[in-house]
Image 1 (tube, rainbow, N blue to C red):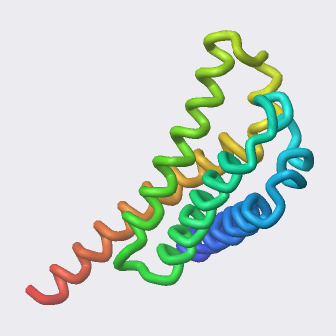
Image 2 (spheres, rainbow, N blue to C red; image 1 turned 30 degrees about the horizontal axis):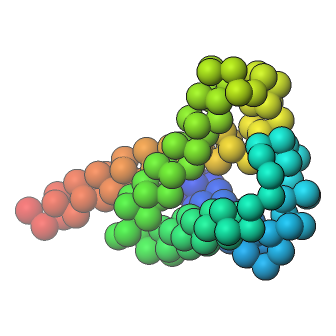
Length: 142
C-alpha cells in the first residue's frame, strides 16, 4: 500500500511540475501574474521565468521516470528533490535576512516547501525500498 501511495505522489508531483514548466515556457507573463506572490519578487523577466520553466520540466520528468523505473528511482527522485529543497531553503533565507516577512512562507508552502518535503520523504522511501529489494535478492540467490 505504501508503495502505491509513494509512486502515486511521485506521479502527481511529476505531472504538476510538468504543467507548471509548460505554463512558464508558453506564457511567462501570464504565469508571472497568475502565481500568488511572484509579482512581489521583482520585475517581470521572461528569460528567467523560462529558464526556471525548463528546470520544472526536468523535475517533472525525473519524478515520472522514477515512478516508472524502480532501478532509477533513487537518483530520479533525489536529483529534483535537491533542487526543490534548495528552492525552499532560499525562500526561508529571504525571510531570515528580512527580504520578506514570515507570512510568505505560509503563502508559498503548497508550491515551495511541501514539494520539497514530499520529495525528501519519497527519496528516503526509495532508498529504503532499494535496500530491502537488494537484501531480498541477495537472500534469494544464496
